[in-house]
Image 1: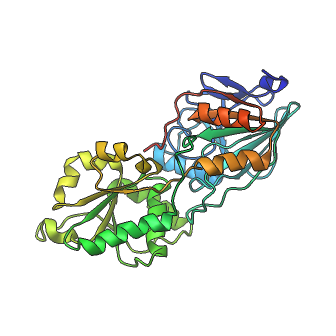
Image 2: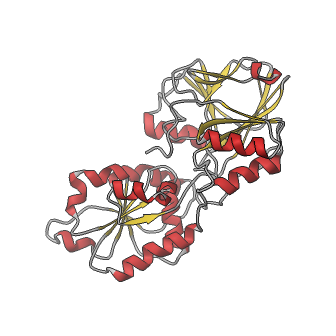
Image 3: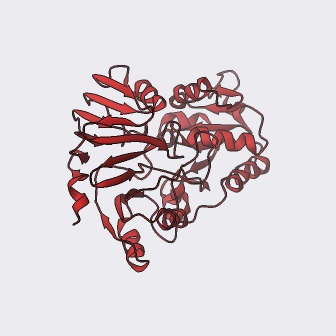
Length: 336
């Protein structure tokens, strides 16, 4: 325990800052919430007052309805909240995602939320923010996790499309962030044809288009009764992973099942999901990026919110960094 523990505290609702009277990414309804990004395990409805980036607030309204909170406030520039000074900085995770810098009498705390250092064309790149305490995720906090070049992974998808022109390729991708990233990687790799979307992905893809993010030719994955199942031969179809276990997937004739996730590096997970074509595409830091972040920022302390905490704490100990696990619950590996 250090003197900084009084200034940012893990509670059942989530991280709490007494000097500002707010929680960060609380998992239960609270009076005042600061939200790092729009994924459902970090951005929940029911708080009285919510502060986040404009895009995160708009994403929450799309997902939960305009009345998801009693009051909302866009985080613009450094702001005074109680006895704290707060600012939001790009996290590189999904559109609108931010790290939250909190300055109190105990020092400067940076809460990363989920973050990625491999640039994504679908959002602003991660920004290093100097701090006394780095409060980091550790979703892929094990030395085995070393994410490959995402364009190379997309190359595997396009190679499979060429090899199996009579089969549709169904790509599992979460609705916020991953779906748009896969689409933009396909465009960067030269695929300029239509990409078909399950209906659950449409609203957030439309929002990205409204934000000026070029996704190209997107079409509904609706089968024409007269055309039959062969209608999507050679097509790329994106869907939430849950759709693969539903009758929707049975519309397609012998599809190639793919899944875009950092967890596809774990072959057992791919087999459990019946994935024929695993695509290791992640929107989180991997082990080298996570440890490099700690080494480069060199905070006085590193706190680990969730994920593979023990390995990160051990690495910090071996490399002369003070670290502690917070063991927060309610945050998923890569939420749908």
